[in-house]
Length: 198
Image (cartoon, helix red, strand yellow):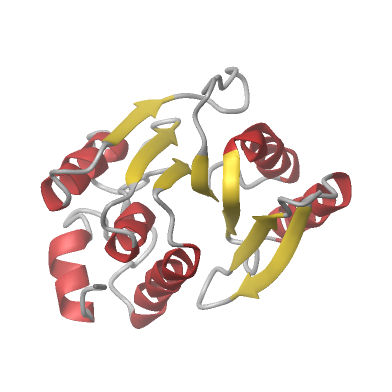
């Protein structure tokens, strides 16, 4: 179940994550509630996230799919605020605290330059929210699509034109990827599903 606004602000958001973005607004709350609803629709048993930061999207996904396994990858950039630690590491601790029986792990990687070899790993849902340039977003979609079983969610398509253009290019290049549409709360999320009959 998704927490109410006050619980979300108090128990999910990092207390030092206050700027440059103010996540303690109804707009951002609705954004993560949207991610929760997408995961409710997909019902993933396994989730891969590219771009973890403080794990807010991961928290929303696991609220919707509380038995799912979760893998998160992040470049470990600074928090862009007063927090001086590594947001991904804080996120992993919080996710493990909330879902102690789930298989949850994260690691640092540059998905633009380091090969991603998951071998036989497959994920029902993949969330792309890392490099927001056209080339970077397209690279992440193409890199991780082979590991996607059901659906890929691409963040920020309503706010960042380069990401929206990358989604269009990816769909042109990938005939067995079908656009399920774009949902918008604040930043927007494109949902792409795999055509298993292709």
